[in-house]
Structure formats: structure tokens, C-alpha cells
Image (tube, rainbow, N blue to C red):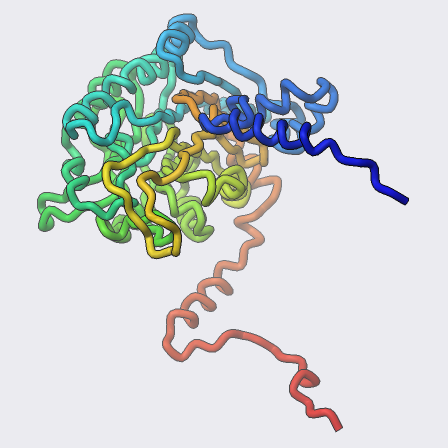
Length: 418
């Protein structure tokens, strides 16, 4: 039986149209996968697909939050994506709800990488000002910015001149954000390239925790440094030395798992063991390398550790003056690839928000009832059923030079045939 002739011209046209539409970083012309599905599926189909992809919170799809007109006006006037959702918990008899409003900011750089460094940094400050103001107007209690937000993510280049963007914990960017923290009674997490002036001017990839009174609560340094693709970060800084700190703030216990740490399940676990209720994952990652992993890892961490996770990724394609290679056989190139944004929140009950735009700046806001953390712990009993003593024993053995894996072989595998 002959197969019907395929309309290759039409198919090629569709492929070309999709490629053209995606060249700006969109998903075939749509801001996000969620937007694409909502615009192209019938309502009852979209509802079912949404249930599978995003889960349910207390048996229902996440509710949206009505935001003040002033926040909406800032979003419209400065062309950034603005979305807001609400994670609820069951009402308890002995505890009042513990609702915290959290926010995530994703953004592209403001000037070309060829501009003067001071101009680049100040332009990013000015770009973020209205987005932070929108968060403040919306009543956000805890706000997290993206990884190395003050600069281009230039660690692909291996050029040391980008070290000029490094600053002390109490440097210019912290002072800039302290004013907002005091103004809006807001805790702000500021991931920067840190210069440790007290220890030989050593550089670190660091998140500074600014309290709602404008004080510096503390810092955390990135635990895991990638050595994959163009992520040549170990040219600039090495693994952090701050452990897995949890910061008790006016709005709950928070932690920061910076970027590549999301690929390490024990890193997530450690923050949970130290009592985190919200873990932020400020990142800079590109579509070709990690996009299929992006909606999975943080959501899995939220489920496994019974806490909320806020995932932030920058947006845009950053082109650098000098082409570079990374020893992976690819020809020299001048950009990292497309940073695909798609910031989102995940909850311990397996529900999550739709993502922000794949190619636009954005502010994602969520109300989270921290009571849900304990409720999910009680429901699933992951802490109770875990076998930490077994894991600890295996890890202790694994660290020894004479470690041998516990492998039991089928004796017939090595039996000689007669």
C-alpha cells in the first residue's frame, strides 16, 4: 500500500516559521510553553494538560493574585512580564496561616558587553529599579535576583578583565539594594561576584542576604562549580566554603542553592536538614544545555525536601567582544547561547507556577503558606522513612581510598561453558 504523499513544502514552511518565531528566544512566537498551550488547546484539554504539567494545590489549580495598579503600570511602562499566584495550605486548628509573599526577578543585560563596565553596571541598576519598585508596590516580603545580576555572565570567556565587576559583600550593589529593603520592609537576596578583600582578594560566587531593615544578615557561597560546555567558571572562583546555611528572617527560614548546585540532590537535602522553608535557586543557564532539566530538578527538590523552591534564570543572548572555545570541539563563538528565563516557583505538594517569559524581563510573585511544609512532611513522612544512617555509612566508606562498591554478581556470569 502506497503511503500518501507528504506536503513537504507545507512542512518546511512550518519548520521555517517556528525557527523564525523562536529566533528571539520565544517558544514559536509565544512567551512561554504555558502560553503556547493555553492559546492552542481547547479549554478542557488545556485544563487537563495543565493538571499534569503543573500539578494541583489542595486539589485545585493555582489561583492568581490580584496586584495593585501601580505594579501593573510599572510592568506595562517598562515592558516586563508580571505574574502572580498563590499556594494555599489546609487550615489548622493550632496554628495560624504563615503566608509570605515572595518574588523572583529575571532580566537581560542593559547594554552591550562592549560598553564601559561602569556604564554596564549602572544601566543594570537602572533597569532593575522599576522591577524592584513593582515588587515593593505588590507587597513582596522576600525578593531574589538572578545569579551574578550586576554583570554579563562572562565566565565563558576566561578573560580576567571581567573580574572588575567583583565587589565586597558590603559593596555598591548591596548599598543599592539596602535602600529598597528599608523602603519596602523587604528581605532581598543579591547574588554577586564577590571579592573577599580580607583573604587575598579571592573571588567567590556569592549570595548576599539583606534583611528587611537594610542590614546584612549573612552570605552564602556557591557550593558546586560547573566544568561543562562554556561554563568555565573555575577560571574565576572555586567551590564555596560556607556550608549549607539557612537564614532565619522576619518572613521565615530561607536558603540559597546557587545555580549548578541544583544538579546535586545532596545539596538540596542539606538545606532541608538545616530547616529551610524556602530555597532560592538563582541561575544562569542556556537552552541547549539544560532546558529539559529546568522544570524538573527544582520541583523534585521541593517534593523530596518538603519546602518551597524559587528558580530564577536570566534572559537574552550575551555577545562578547572576543570569540572563545571551550575544548569541546565546537568552533569558536562569541556568545554563551540563549538564557531562557522561565523562572518559576515549586511547592512541596508537587504543584508549581507557570513560568515567566522565555525571552523577556520579568517579575514572578507568589504567596506561599509555609504551613504547607509541615503538612506535607506529616503526609508523606520522608524524614521519618529516610535511612540517614545507611547513607552516612555508605558515604563514609566511599570517601576511603580502598572503597569497593557493594555489587553482588550473578555467579553464572563468570561460569565457563562446558
